[in-house]
Length: 116
Image (tube, rainbow, N blue to C red):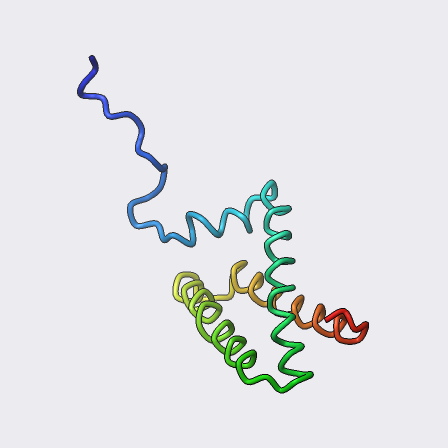
């Protein structure tokens, strides 16, 4: 029955839509998803704060290498994609910046109070 009908496409998207536009930007642009975004930012901030404390306190080179790879790789690639698309910093760039600022603040607080 109804063999000619294939149903709706699995995802409503443009054929040339980038995966960041499809999976990441809705968390920034849709206010209903902001609690999820803030939870993700908090977790990432805590995970980045630990190697920052190790670098500051112990001079750990492996933690420094991890921070350089985390800052130099995906973060720069995300911001460059947004710059190439819009020719200006957009919401994704500001979220990356907010994540790094949050992780620095968390690292300072954790180190000052001896939490890590």
